[in-house]
Image (cartoon, rainbow, N blue to C red):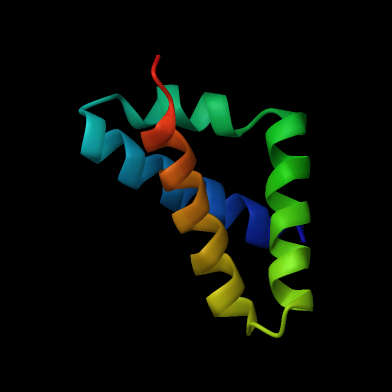
Length: 74
């Protein structure tokens, strides 16, 4: 599970950083907290439980992270 969470974090952090012109390390730090990992793992397990393949579940969670980031007003 840790490997897939790490993959999702790295991929989402890279895309969010590129989209907003931020340093990837800054976004990575925000997504690398234990709490964030718990949320990502839970979302991934739920996506698997809904019948998605592992690749589809990872993509779904990554897209959700990007949508969440876009919705923030910070």
